[in-house]
Length: 126
Figure 1 (cartoon, rainbow, N blue to C red):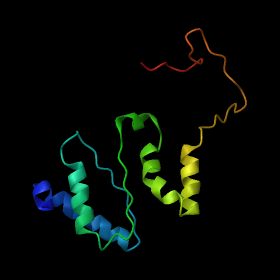
Figure 2 (figure 1 turned 180 degrees about the vertical axis):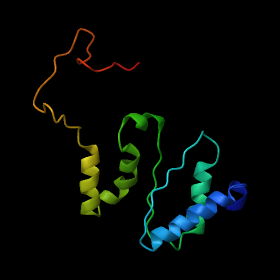
Figure 3 (figure 1 turned 90 degrees about the horizontal axis):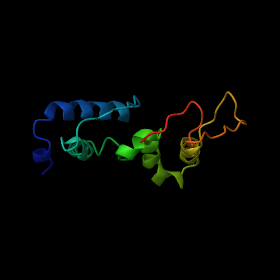
């Protein structure tokens, strides 16, 4: 049963359900749920989706992996991927997310690599 999975989260679930009502009435919101692994973030969202299924006609989900922290919008891209084939606007947004970053100062300039293989001004991450 879902209620057992979100014990002690009634307040959070009430806030999320209220935000879902707002979104359903045209006042969309962005919600960030963060925390240590295993504290019930996913269970809370599953409970919300079950409770508010009639309010939310289309729901996309994604998961943030630790590696995604280095890739801007990676989680948004994973949410949009299943929708891209059937929706041209979604496909265009996904293409923008995946496009390589542009260097506005010198877009055509190539940087020589140092002996260490790192471009000048860039830090090598372990």
